[in-house]
Image (cartoon, rainbow, N blue to C red; front, top):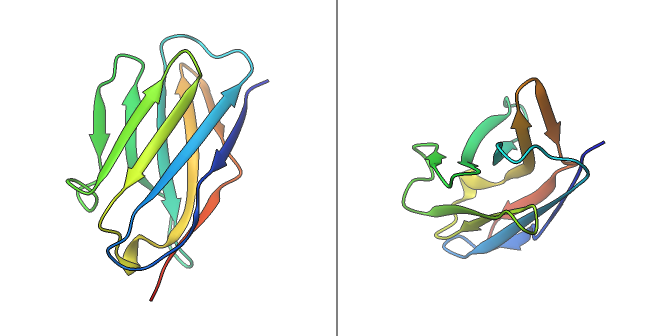
Length: 115
């Protein structure tokens, strides 16, 4: 069983920064994709950024140049550095790890961007 635990969410002013972390436990295949998705009230869950075990990254257009996804394979942890945050970035952010037919989600962490 794979368990994902996110941390680092909170309240930040527009223009500020936050760093999210997601630690995975359990048996994870070495070749996988880890990433972040978000869901704002009344909206569908959307991709924010992903990173493969080979460090290939993919970003939503809305966060390119502001967010950076990274990972530590030894720690089975994925990070999301969020800079220049905007009110429209406010959402519950979910960590995800996937390989083959397997797809696991964290419980989510709230990010609020408000002055």
